[in-house]
Every structure is written in C-alpha cells, then in structure tokens.
Image 1 (cartoon, rainbow, N blue to C red):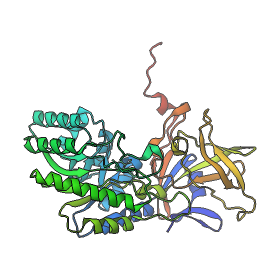
Image 2: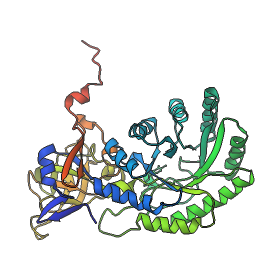
Image 3: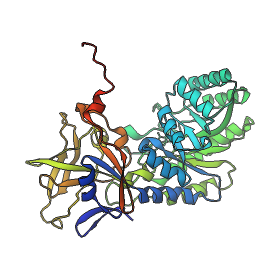
Image 4: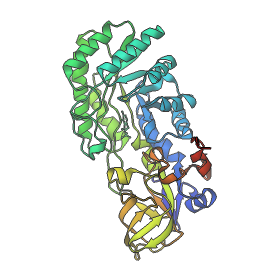
Length: 414
Ligand SMILES: Cc1ncc(COP(=O)(O)O)c(C=O)c1O
C-alpha cells in the first residue's frame, strides 16, 4: 500500500493531510512515513528471519538519525561509506557488528575509527587500501576484519552515473589474480582477517537476472578463495534493487530474496544485502509551494539544491498537487522548475498537472538520495525533514536559517 494517497481529494501521508504539514512546517519540506519505512525494511528483515543473513540499510540513501533508529529497532544493520555515516549509525545505538564500511577512499582516521569501534567489516576496494588498513591495525595492535569488494564486470543497465560493477568503474578490484593474491596476503597477515567477499553492481536495478549473475560470479570467486584455506563468513551482494518512479511494477525485496535464496542453496556463507532506495525511496516526498506560473513553467520554492536527482541523472519523479482538483480534465504539461540560476534546475519536465500560485505540490518517491544530496547552493537554507507516525507529524530536522549558513564562515577583513 502507498503511504501517500488521496482521501477526498486531499493528499495524505498515512493519517496526516500534507496540507497540515506544509502549514505547520513550511516548504520546501521532506516528509517520510514511518510506517512505509518499517514495512519496506521488514520485507528484508522478515525474509531473513531464522537465518543469520543481514540487511544493512545503505545510510547514504537517507541518513536522518530518527530514520536510522527506526530501522535499527526492527533489525537492520548499516552500510556506511564515511566516518560521518558510521558516526550516525553508532549514535543510534547500532551494534558495530552490523556495520559494513564500503567506499573507495577511506581515510586513515575513518579506518582507525572503524577498527576501534569493532565494525563487522571493511569492504576493501584496492590493494593500497588493504595495506593502509593493515598498517593501522598493526599500530593499534588489533586485527581488522576485511572483505574484498570485487568488480564482477556486470552491466546492470540504467544511468551511467549509477552503475558501479563494470570494468573501468572506480569501485572494487577487477582482476581475479589480484584478488586471489590479496586474499593470500590477508590470510598471512596477523593484523587482517578476511571475513567476506563483497560487490555492488549499481542502483535502480529492475532485472533480477543481474543479481543472479552477480551471485554466481561471487560463488565462483568464493570457491577459489576457499582453496587458499580461507573460510568466508559472508557474501555481500550489495544493494541496488530498483523502485517504481511511475506506476510500473518492479520486482520487490521479497522477490529478490526468494531468487537469492534459490541461488544460495547449498552455500554455507551467510548473505548480506545493502538495500537503500528500496527501503527509503517511496517512503518520502518533497513538499514545495508554487511561487509563480509563467507560460509552461511552474516556478516552485524547491530547487536542485533540495533534490538533485532530476538535474544529476535526469531522474523522473511524479509530481502531484496535494489538492486533487479536477480529476485530470484541466491538467496541462508543465515544467516544474526551481529558483536557482541554472537551466538544469528542474524537478520535473512535462509533468501533467493542474496548479496555480500558492498550491503545494508533492514530488513523489523522494525519500532516497533526496535530502542527503541537498546543498546550500545559491545560499539557500536546506529544507526541514518531518516524520509522520500514524496521525502525528514530527519535526526530525529543523529548517536551516540564514545564520546557519553563515555560521561556519570567518570574516578576516574586519
Ligand atoms: C556500496 C553500496 N551499497 C549499497 C548501495 C545502495 O544502493 P541502493 O540504494 O540502490 O539500494 C550503494 C549505492 O550506491 C552502494 O554504493
């Protein structure tokens, strides 16, 4: 069931009319449904019940600590890609043994923090990174748990900027020889322990065959690694399951897990997944007010600094008026654009909608890679974030003020 539905022509998030949220908190404003976040995550967590498989929510997709706490409480671990994300996960009480640290450019400080905090694993993305982790673990007189992130050379389709598992992409290690000799090195080092094998082939993947192919390539490599004498605890197949940004149906998490359970039959390693978008995307909308109507443009108060996806990936989001006013008869094709001085500043092109000045619009499926990518470009304060819990709307991030924007700057000319 969709968390955002019209009831008597008014768009609701669960039991709260979005008009009330816009009135109480202003716009632009991100709104998330607690119920939708929980239901989406439980599709993974429940399918893993009775096993020691683990769903590590990808913090990069939506990182507000109230959201992380909800997901932690229902049994998610976390996939983090920076010291900041690790700090967020730990601050909501995540068990460090459920935290996976991915990313190609981990700094020495981040590595040290990961080791000291006792995280489950570093997904190592290069030979140099492994040497650095080993040296830091040695200094600390500790053993660092590592998995190698390999690049399976699978083109999962979709926008070039979100595929990550092809040869030539910056992620993971591509050469099987390099992976095997690195595995031997890890095995022989007293300061590293090889605990898993990882990959992540991209995002917004809607074809389960790509996941099957990834699983098969992972098994082949894991078998070669086990010949060295290494017994891997887990195989981490990353995140990447796509969601519907329109009304088309795509495979859901249960279908993905059924498919992977079939592939994993007879394997002794546990399965780890790193879902982001499939948990957070359809749990959120961005509310924005129409400031002006000019020709075919609806000029709204949210912009590319609030939601970058349309400008960055030409991503398409549905945009609805929170007051459904004409059953579709008077809808026109409009371009929904923001106030930023860039032609690429748009939230949607050719959106069929009926709207006038001061109307509030909801940019749908904006929970993932929405607020987290926002910036202060054009000195625009970042939007607030609101969590709807049944019939209550709770502020979970204050709207930034102009003073917030200036407070990190130092004037040296006084
Ligand atoms: C390493 C890694 N894991 C998980 C994810 C989450 O992907 P998604 O949000 O598509 O599930 C990403 C996203 O890019 C990623 O880079």
